[in-house]
Image (cartoon, rainbow, N blue to C red; front, side):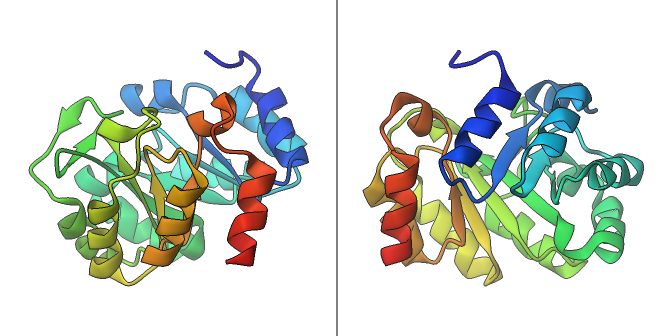
Amino acid sequence: MFSDDPLDVALKWQSMGAPRIHIVDLDGAKAGELLNLNIIRDIARAVLIPVQLGGGIRDLKTIEILLKLGIERIILGTAAVEDPHLVTEACLRFRDSIIVGIDAREGYVATHGWLRDTLQTPAALATYMVQLGVRRFIYTDINRDGTLTEPNFSAITEVIEAVRLPVIAAGGISSLNHLRMLNKLGAEGAIVGKALYTGDINLKQALADIIRT
């Protein structure tokens, strides 16, 4: 564990130039409902940069509450697989505030905080979501997340080519070269977590490098 104060961490990354804060309620993802709303509220109120949130968001009421709290983007993961109607309604009502998060293991989508495997491929799910109105995605390779190895470039490319819409990459990102490669492949952005805490990636250096390219 790197810190027991999420708000302090969020403020730290903001002070170093982070363009956006990415939050996942891991407890909520497994339980099927948000379980850390107070912390999420504190972060949304304190930071001046946009915040996006995923984990346990399974209904329109929760989406509305979070948007009113100041969360800019809502990430739907399990709901995208199990409740397509929710995705359709959410996209109709909240448009660009909705992102579908696709978490994959060994080429197939996993749900419920990575606890349940499905038979859907990331590209197939993404293509279906586009039909429902989704306009932005996050692709996470579960086996590489937190490993400081490298992203699953081929899988990310497959999703990008399938949807031709903004795709944010996550999982295994641990160097500036990884960020450069993702940029070259057409990823809209990257979610960097562990590599920031370990120092493998310097946030200010990474931002300056990407801007130059």
